[in-house]
Length: 207
Image (cartoon, rainbow, N blue to C red; front, side, top):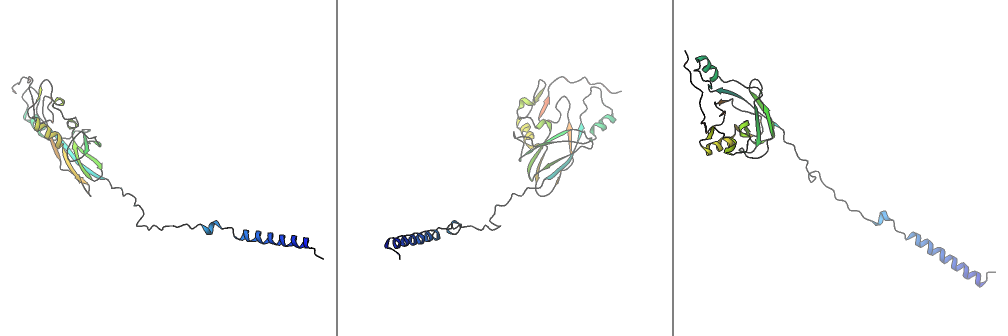
C-alpha cells in the first residue's frame, strides 16, 4: 500500500526527470544557430595580377674620325686614314630614362665591341643615350680648364640635354642609324661649342 509520503516522493522524481529531459532537448546547436553568410567573388572581380612589360633592345653602332693633332704637316695618306671612320672597342655609352638628359640616375651602360656596336635592354618608354662627356652634371666648370673655354653656354647645354640619341621604345626593338663622331685635338674631344686657347705645336713643312 503506497503511503502519502511515498506518493509525493514519486511525483517529485517524475517532475525532476521531465525537467531534465526538456532542458537537454532545448540546448542549441552552435552549427545550426549561427548563420555564416558567404559572398561569391567572380573571377572578373578578383584583383588582376600585374602584367610585366617585355623588354626591348636598342641597338646601334658608333665610329670615329679624327683631326690631325701633330706638328709636322701630315701626308695625304695620314689625312685619309684620320678621315676614315673606325670603331673603338670598349668605348662606353650610357642610357637614362626621359626625353632629355638631366641629373636622374644612369640606368645602364654598354661597351662597344670591335665593330663599334652597342646595345641596351629596356622596358618600353623614352630614353636618352649619352657619351662619357655627357654624364657629368651640367656646369661650364666641368668642361673648362686653363686652355679650354666655352664659346656658347646655351649651345653647350643644348648638346648636353640632347645626348647622343633620343629613343622612343614602343612595341618593337629599335635599331639606330650608324653614328659617326669627330674627335678634335687639344682636349676638345667630342665637346662642341668650345675652343682651345693654349699654344699650338709648331707647324713643320712636309718635304
